[in-house]
Amino acid sequence: MLMKLWGVVLIAPLAGACAVSAPRAPDLAVPAVYAAPRPGADPPKSNLEHWWRLYQDPQLEMLVAQALEGGFDARLARARLAEAQATRGAAHYQIYWPSGGLEASANHASGDDDSERDIDRYAASFSPAWELDLFGRRAASRRVAEGDLHSAEFTAEATRWVLVAQVADNLFAARGLAARLTEARETLRIQRALEASAQAKVEHGLVPASDAAQTRANVETIRSEIQDLEAQLDAARRVLLALCGRGRAPLDEMPILPRIGAPPAPPATVPGDLLSRRPDIREAHWRLASAAGRQQLAALAFLPTLTLSPSLGISKVTGSDTASLWSLGAGAKVPLLDIPRLRKTLDARRAVSEQQVLAYERSVQTAYVEAETALAYLDSDTRRVTMLRAAERDAAIGYEAKHEGYRRGFNALQDTLVAEGAWRQARIALAGAEVTALQRSVQVFKALGGGWSPPAAEQGAALPPPLSSTASKKAG
Image (cartoon, rainbow, N blue to C red; front, top):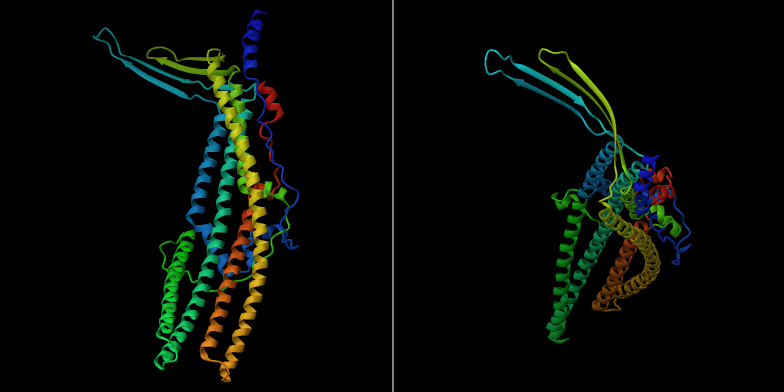
């Protein structure tokens, strides 16, 4: 009875000291629908996971496959994931496996004279120790290990998520540069023809010399623009090679054609899908789960630690029989003098949990803002492309009319070249808008969480709460 009373006296203040509530529930509310208008197309889920195939672009698919297989970012992510899996395995053994090991010793004692004989002593012992989990430490440790592993998994998926978007974005940007370079070279041809026409008129005294000087200035300006575009295109090709893990390969291995297509329609998703589709949100969730487990462990540190420690020993001395001994012991450690330090540790863990709650909330809001903004910009870019396409058609009609008039002798060559220059500028503006729309569509697919397919998501595994009510009761 006295021992029970002492137990209550020791444990009661500790239980009161470790009482802790779970981290507050994060605010994950998002609007029911996106405000930005979207086409009604709804590609299958598999197409969202492999959204780059919607572009029906063999070069894009090839580059994505190369980047995911041999790109440094992808390989580094796989190495970090392997480290996380090994760390989780070590934590598993630490949670469930006993500590201790086998010890052995041997000793030889020699006598000083002939009257004393040599003595040999041999001993071996095996002393494992198990911590008895009466308060839920094992479950909390498992929550920490699982949270760390899953957060590392989603960090790797986020790398894949970002890498695919980078490849597509850089490829479309490079094609836009190639298209601009093609148009710039055609513009240079036109400007040189205008320069020749102006020089001929100067020689015949029809226009002042300043007109020829202006056309020469235009030629040099276009030449400098071509020089800059060639350098930008080479740099873009080098970036694509680097993303694929082939940064030292010759530029000839990355051909870029001035081919610009139309972006595919984004899927008709809702903001709530971001919670499961965005790998950065999933990562934030598991970081919160890990922090909650550490908070629970800090609370349970106030409670006694109970250890079961059996032992088996064998010893032998020269000239005597072998002796064996076994024992079964149990120990308890009550951290009475550590309470002030444990309180501060628990306060720190609570603060870390609050930081992870805030990070979780921010990841959700950031994802919604990115998706909403990307969809709105894509809608605007699509409308802009339509307008510029109409402008390019009108400019082409104007150029064809001037060209036909020149062929029939009604118009001067200069008027025809000016009309062709205006048409070329309209084509440049259209190509720029089309590239922007393509890049914006990449941002949409990335913002909606496309580009990855982790096993947990495919199996529809439910996400556990950061800290269960059962664990809270045990901690209190």
